Length: 504
Image (cartoon, rainbow, N blue to C red):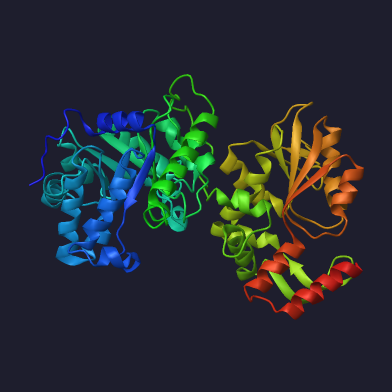
């Protein structure tokens, strides 16, 4: 039976001590995949244990914690479970261990899971799924020197299907963070928040300023390390356990990979905004509950890479019919081989959410007081972006009301403020200039226009003549390139549209 008295402190004290001693927030996930072992390791009597021992020996002074994922051991049957116990015994309390088992049950079953995690396997902490409420956590919290990490906002792409559901003005994950931190203090309970959602990290840090976060999603899942650290770092420079598994364990030189990642984390810590004191609990819900992976902002500005989040948004636009190919008559009377209808985003909230994330990436670098969405296509888009960013929105009316307030602009604003114009796409720029007129007449300043798609038909140049800069998530040529690369359209269709663009 593993020794339950390895340290004289509780888990989070042990974690803080190890983090400080090793100058590290790096967590190495010990996730054995025998098919990837070297021939030398496979030849060992206990190859899983031999593999883990090599990783531990190479990284013991570089990490703050180890995290074996129970599934990889269970998948190997009894041999795998024996290797799990031997692995935790080998660490021998020198470094804390989180058992990533995602347990979530109640009553005697939860108590049995807790006994297994802490007594049978000897872990210092365990991940817990909270769908059953406080009862799922209580048996684990009865171990005074151990801890739990409650799943809050996970790193996977479909996390937003449930975790961002609106709960009376705030997303479910944030409601959960508030409730879970009431089950136990930060010396007993941490939260799992994915690096792929830095807005969620930031929001949860406001709610739980002292809690430790287990942060998956760096590496294979594409999380932005610098953004995650800036969003989630605690006031004392601790409070995050940043997990890496494949990128370290299966690197040609695991120690070199761990050293590089630890140093990158420390550089991000040094560059993160300084908080002189813990962040206070917000009086109102934090801004962003339509969270989406951070790599959307980064990848989209470069036009995307094969298989990345930018590709997915483009493919989704085609899937919902927002980008169509055929023969279409435009408002000008021209025949076009392509038609873009971003009004359809309002009927597809998942795609609208990803589009809002892309807009947010562009807006993050601009200076403005209000988002001014142009009716009608941009109104639902602007609303989604405003909710995501926690920014106020106004919109210029297409026609001034002849009754009531007779306002030309809906929403609250003040003369002298700066508005950024938001629309779905741009062709020549004329409609943007027309929509800007009532904003300028009202004393607002407009120097930037943000769109999802630039049709590359002179809009940027026309706006520049009026002192405005255009910022687009995609150009039409980038969309064509991605759709052709994924086989959604043929190369002939791509060339046909490009030829048409060149002739207009």
